[in-house]
Length: 55
Image (tube, rainbow, N blue to C red):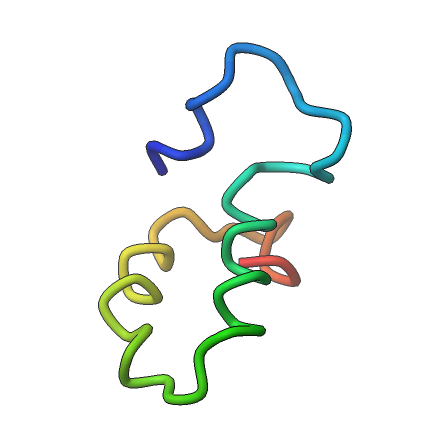
């Protein structure tokens, strides 16, 4: 995901990839999953056994 590479160094206020924080924030703010479906399906290829709890 492009957002994971916005900053050259890890930012201390974010745990793990930036997309984890962005995803959590948008999930807290959006009521209908349909509004997130395109972004959610774009994240699927990025998920792995190591990130499944966060992606």
